[in-house]
Amino acid sequence: MTDTPYPICVTCGTQYAAPRSDCPICEDERQYVPEHGQQWTDLATLRAGEHTARIEEQGEGLIGVGCDPRFAIGQRALLVRAASGNVLWDCVAYLDDETVTRVTELGGISAIAISHPHYYTTMVEWSRAFDAPILLHEKDRRWVGRPDPAVRFWSGSSHRLADDLTLLNLGVHFAGGTVLHWPDGERGAGALLSGDIVQVIPDRAHVGFMYSYPNLIPERPTVVRAAAEMLRPYEFSAIYGAWWDAVVPRDAHEVVQRSAKRYLDFVTG
Image (cartoon, rainbow, N blue to C red; front, top):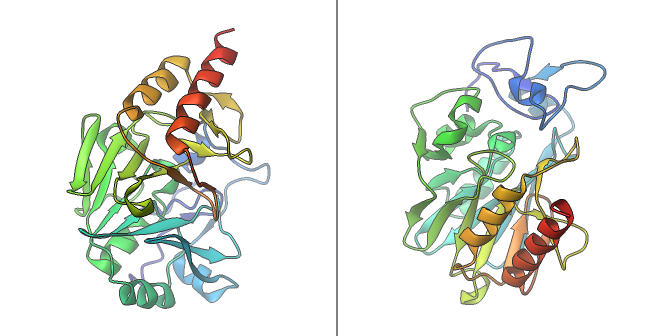
C-alpha cells in the first residue's frame, strides 16, 4: 500500500489521484454533496482511526470484506472463491494490513471486478496490494478518479472473466452497471452478485431498480426491460447485493423477472 496521501471523499469513498475541491461522483445526480459540504480523508488517516477490518462469510464460497464502523456509502465487497481463482467483486475504501493478511490467507485475489463507479473507491490500492487487474466497463471510464495501468476496460454486453464467471452489463444505475454471474455458486444452482445494479431490498420476494437511490430517481423502463431480458437465460437461485447479509436466498431468477414486471407495470401505468 502506498504512503502517498491520495485524497478520499468521505461521502462516497472515491480515491482521487490529486487533491481537489470537488468530487464528481458526489456532484452527479445519482449521489449527493452533504449539506455541510465536501470533506476529505486518506487511507493513513482511516487506518489510524476507529475503523477495523470486517471479514465474514456471506455464503458458501463467498467472503464479505469491509470495515467497522461503516465508511462512506457503507457497502461490503465479496471475495468469490471460484474454481478458477479468487475474484474480488466490488470494492471498499478501507484497506489495512489485517485485511491484506486475511485475504492472502484465503488465497489472495486474481482479479477485481466492480459493478459501478460508486464502488471504485480505493481499487488501485487493492490492485497493488494483491497484484490484481481491475475490470471495469468502458461506458463508465470517465468516472475513474485515479487512473492506473491495472485498470482494464471491457466492452459489450458480456465478458467472460473466467470459465466459471461472467460479467453482464445491464446498464441499470450507470451505463456501465454490471453484475457477476457465478453458475457454480449455491452448489451449482447459480448465484448473481449484483451490487446495487439489481438491488436487494427488505422484501426478499422482490428486488429494486433505481437510477438514483439516495435521490429516489427511478430507472428508465427501457433499461429495466432490457436488463430483465438479458438475465433471463442465466440460471441463479440466489442474489447477493451490496450490503452485509443482503441476500435473496432462493428462487432469485423468478424474483428478478417478477420484480421487473411489477416495476414496469407501475412506471408505465
